[in-house]
Length: 147
Length: 418
Image 1 (cartoon, rainbow over the protein chains, first blue to last red):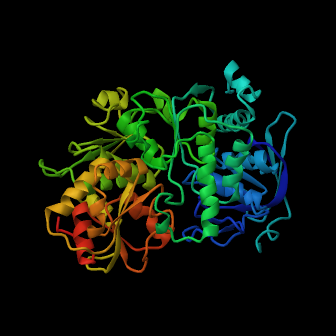
Image 2: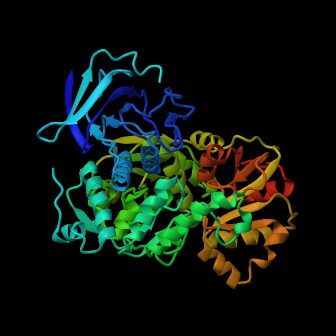
Image 3: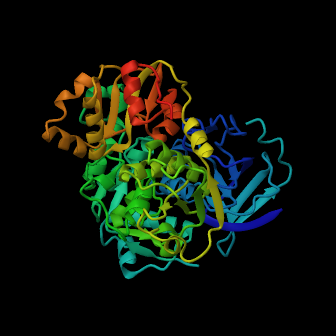
């Protein structure tokens, strides 16, 4: 199953999806040392973002989330890519700064996020025209649920 | 929809203003594309909220610009840092913990930013004017500049505010544009006495309500009594911006872009009308207080956002009006510029008799300053009450300035019956 979206920061990634039920504020919501969700009011509390493709409607809250995402990418505990249903300028800036400073790319795409489940293996890559192609590969499900 | 760059924008990207300017412009272009801006506009000043240390990336970003020889291109003030540089003895942090925070503040100064270290840049000599295009970070400063002054800034934050300062440019979108500044949601006060007093609590409560109910829309408030001074609007905006994502509010007949309903709504009808009753106000105020009346008190925290000179004068008058028993410490966050004014007027010498502790360059809810965290802390700030429980793990009681002073003396939470 393949869907098309728009990159706000282009790149490639392939990893198990972590689909968040509600938006997450990285600032105060994620441990920057481990990439673990620590917002006690969040339904995905305890999930690790590190090494996953993070999928949510959008981020939430403070602009300090830019710094938190950039710091997570620097420590290599950030998501491998982020797909949001709505553009998220705060997370985009964090990823752009991490790329500029450290040469590490965490691609961001805006695309429909329905029918993607936590654990699905997701592949993201640019099309020849520069759009964001998001492919949900079958056979996921269990792969990411224990992370 | 594409981003159109001017010759000047291209010259910045090409490095004509130096490598640091090019790096900043590159980030701004990517940001502008992400938010769908079509062009950039000139700004007259910036306020940078980059001095709170979030990890090595905070330092790497700014020191990278310093190493490329960067300088800000417009007058730029700085928001609070993690340290009180004037009163280092107040800091409850080890030297190792303080070092990166200190380096971060110094690196911003090396870029030519003014060491104002205040969340209330609108109280400084660089206060913008009506209609000025500016790029400000810090939510309360943004909402004050837009709403109370009528200057124009979108909601900037980490990295982007400094990139605007380094280039003198900002994406032409959001609250920079007149069409996005019109009111969308109308909040009407109903069921209040005609003699409704302009209490501090009323303005904080209104701020919380519009913050929760407006979402990303521009709120308009109808029926508020005329504020005593702009500090009440500061408190309203700070509460609204901490409870939600408000970057601009209008108060009919009070704020400069809402002198008539037609001006506030651009001749259109509001998308939604929200009725606000006395019970809503009571509920909003109660939501700020975890600590009950009578709870033992560790401290009072005032000045979030930073205490203005007018607020200091009011506080010092109240303290001297009645015999005051030295009680719990009263921390007052303020700018170093305001503190200097108090010093030159000879007002600081008497502070100790009231256990009055001025804190500058930072704020008591973002860093380790309070001596004791075991009892409740009382504040007259909706913003402090909102953030302190999760930031520094204290129980908060909200009350008026009079309640705060009475409670300090009693070392217990005491509130006048309203």
